[in-house]
Amino acid sequence: MRVKALIFRIIKQFFHDKRTLALMIVAPMLILWIMSLVFNGEKYTPHIAIVDVPAQMLTILDGQDLTLTEMSNTEAEKAITSQEVDAIITIEGNSPVITLEGSDPAANKTVLFAIHSALQRTGEKEQLFQPTIHYLHGSDDMAAFDNFGPVLIGFFVFFFVFLISGVAFLRERTGGTLERLLASPLRRWEIVLGYVGGFGIFTLLQATLIAFFSIEVLDMIMVGSFFYVLLITLLLALTALTLGTLLSSFASNELQMIQFIPLVIVPQAFLSGLFNMDTVADWLANLSVIMPLTYGAEALRDVMIRGAGWEVIAHNVYVLLGFSLTFMLANVFALKKHRKI
Image 1 (cartoon, helix red, strand yellow):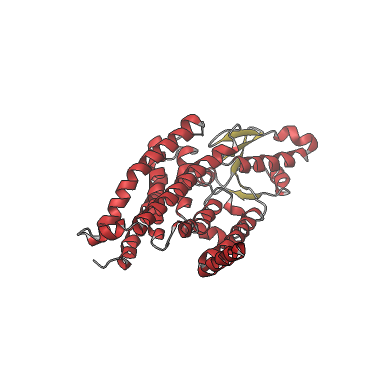
Image 2 (tube, rainbow, N blue to C red):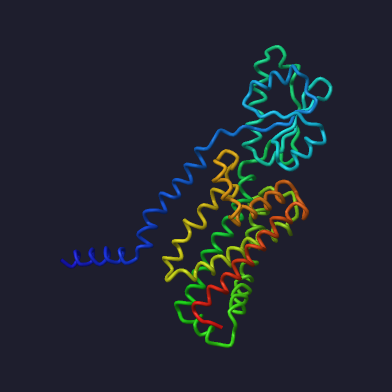
């Protein structure tokens, strides 16, 4: 009888907290749906720039699952630098030269497999077209983890800062500390700025240690400046911090704060560059523009794999700053419901 009463109490609790009940059912289906869209996308077709390649070889390559575009040498170099093409094929002497963009080992293998398949079909002509391979970034021994690593650095920084800052700010409110601060002469923006500054010290420490550990201990590929890696990681942490404190204003307890994870964090893991977005539907790929991790992951890859400088990462840095400022302003307004100053 007591067990029965306990069961009824739990059932009533669930029906009183419809948000938890809905999320428990909807969140797994939402995540599985996103995963199905990402992993069941179209087959990846490499895009290759062709520069002064003889018609005989064009005919051989044309039968492969490749997107071929004839370009001048200048156009091709510009396209591969901006990652619009995966490789360039040119002719030096009588042999083809393949220049791979190189930052994605999976794309490299797809390109080389398609070209080698084409050459094998030529039979005796194979020797004539034996290619020389160069890498714009990375090398043939670059591992998949080197490609995923920069994104994973950004993801884990974002995830843990979001979770810890959100729960900590929520406890300030449920414990009554925030109300006491609001009753003081402090203004709302000063409270938000104070929390960001306080947590910011620890996010700086976290960003430094994670970046150092990934590069020096895990031996993750690192071509560019460590300072830029630190800057991007710190901005990602700042964005997660401001977003976490903002969303904590809409949660009543720790459980409700954790419920934001499948809605805010998980989609970013799949849509921010960890997987190739060229193979998913355009409407789904377009969602990545509203996700802060997209800009952080892209900038980290540019610095760590491609050795890019400020002129390349500046756009992503400004976007992350914009996200942080927007979330901070929204948080100031969100605090208005607790006290009008």
